[in-house]
Image 1: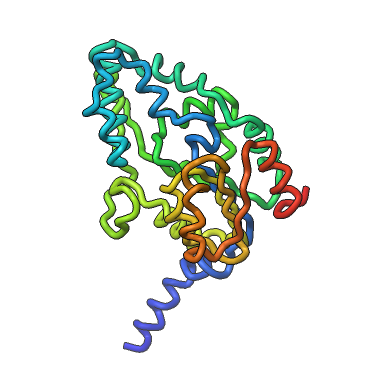
Image 2 (image 1 turned 90 degrees about the vertical axis):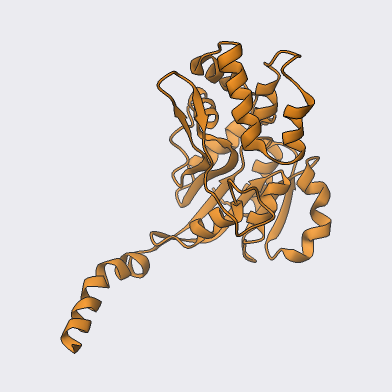
Length: 262
């Protein structure tokens, strides 16, 4: 029996070594997408392509209930089935969404930082994010992944947005995505140890994620957006450092003066 137990332990050594023996220490920069990388809310802008008759109170009530996934599913269905827009045409509209001023320069500069991984954590969707990043040549810089609601193109050409997950453990996040859970997974990777995390966001759905951050981590909250206004009431829940910013130029100046040194 002891031989069998010892043999089982030896069999697990490669996995244990991957999780502990070869872990590399790096930095991680995590970005929201809407109103953080781009200067608008992608779902809201896309909904403006609907006809006045299609922009009903019932449709926009989904936003007030924070049911963004159902909202964009209905918007895409109306655009594609009733207005006959193709997936490519929707992609072209997405590619034209404006970046936050200075954000493109910041992302390209951060890409050159040797010990830094970057990722996106967003309740948008993979199609719109992918189209926008490709339009700016940034589709390959987020080495730590793009964590968002996946989109598949159906045989009839329709875009189907599916939930990133189906979660019930967090009542502060929508059922399709808990950003805090995404951060927990990133922070407990077997492949890499992140000695410091930079989290950049703007909305109240980022609060669950920044609650997970540690004292050396930095939450970068955009001024003038909803989370910045509500943050004082939640400051006691946070362990991380806070940094506020208005645009990519200011964020770049502050990050490279206090966190990154390149």
